[in-house]
Image 1: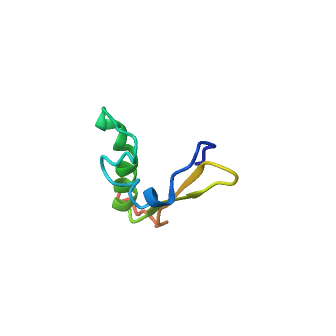
Image 2: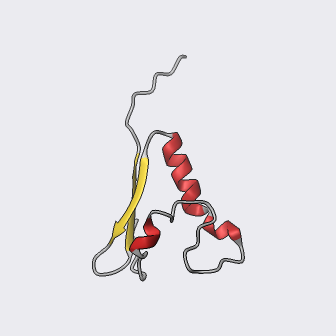
Image 3: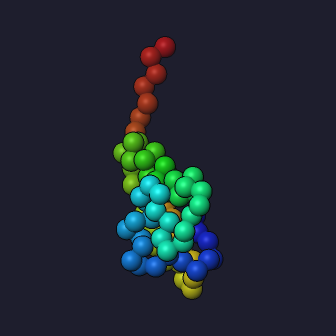
Length: 75
């Protein structure tokens, strides 16, 4: 997923997946800052990883991966 917004400053990137982190913006409703922390928790619980990087010329890109495995159904 990517956007064309102003991007995320380099000094904030390691924190964006932390619960309640909102950077320099003061967030009055803390539910707004749970989204990426929740995404990271879900992806990690399934053995994957999630990260972000700069888009060119502006914005940022988020990506995640999940391990591929075979599922055996006992019928």
